[in-house]
Image (cartoon, rainbow, N blue to C red; front, side):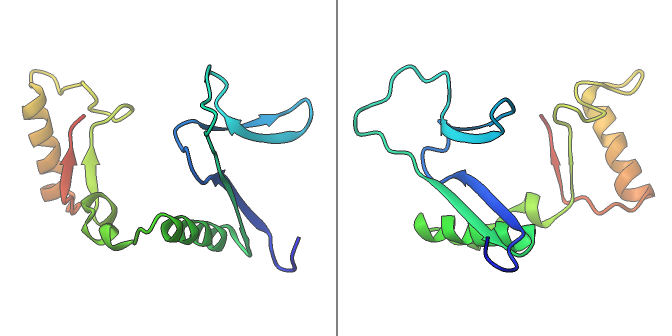
Length: 133
């Protein structure tokens, strides 16, 4: 490894939905390739992977992201418009306390209105959005 490098990021660089990684404990190898349940591969199929290394995981991840953005001609401009990245929100997705659960003698709407009032008004938590699963 290069001097100062202590973090490596490995991932698919194309065909993201069919790429797979497996930690093979018996051989002590990390294997990358097509998912095991794929039954047919077209003759012109191509899959690319990427390695990004740097000092510290944050720098390695940032470098990895920059490479992907450059290759696919994308920018980080959309991040500034993404409500879920820029602001605190409340989600009721799988694993959340109110995921299809309600307070006693209340329906789902009444429960979430009560939660909002308690968190935003009484506890002063500055929620900017509510995501209902």
